[in-house]
Image (cartoon, rainbow, N blue to C red):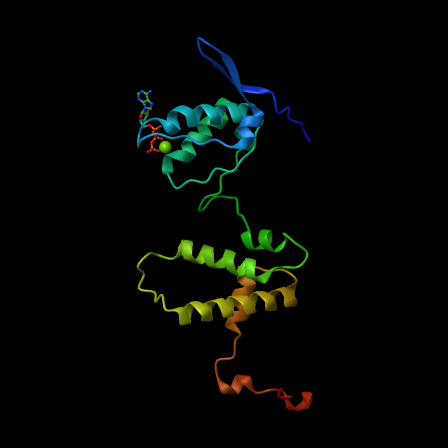
Length: 192
Ligand SMILES: Nc1ncnc2c1ncn2[C@@H]1O[C@H](COP(=O)(O)OP(=O)(O)OP(=O)(O)O)[C@@H](O)[C@H]1O
Ligand SMILES: [Mg+2]
C-alpha cells in the first residue's frame, strides 16, 4: 500500500502577511464549504479540492442526484489522468453493488437487525412518495417480521443473503391450509 505523508501540501495558501499550506492531514480531517445558493461552492472550491485530491492519488466515493455531477467528475478524472480509476454506478450501467452481500460480510455473525435496517432503507428510498401506502404501524411491524425471519431463513439455508433468494423463500410461504399439512410419516407434530 502506498504510504501518504500527512504533511505533504496539496494547496499553497499565500497572503500578503503569511504563507501556509492545505496538506493531506487537513484533507483527512474534513472540509465544510459555506455559501449562498449558486455562489460557486461546487464550481469554485469543490472543483479545486476535487482536482487536487485526484492528482494527489486520493480515492473516494461521490454520491449525487444532480445529473451534471457525473459529467463533472468525468472531466476531473480526465484532467488528472485518473479516468481508469473511475467506476460509475448507475441504472443500466455495467457495475453493480450488492449491498446485502456487503452488509452480511461485515462480521462473522450476521446481525439480522442491521440487514433489516439496510433493506428497509433501500425499500423506502425506492418507494414513491405519496404512493397511497398506509403508514399504519401494524403493516410496518408485519414487514419487519417478514424481512427479519426471511433473512435468518436465507442465511441458514444458503449461507448468504440475496434479494432473489429472499423473494423465492417468500413465494413458497404456504397460502392455504392444505399446504400447511405436515407429512404424517415424520411422526406427530409436537405442540409447545
Ligand atoms: N467567480 C465566478 N464568477 C462568475 N461566475 C461564477 C463564479 N463562480 C461560479 N460561477 C457560476 O455560478 C454558477 C453557480 O455556481 P455553482 O454551481 O458552483 O454554485 P453552488 O454554490 O455550488 O450552487 P448550489 O448551491 O446550487 O450547489 C455556475 O454557473 C458557475 O459557473
Ligand atoms: Mg453546488
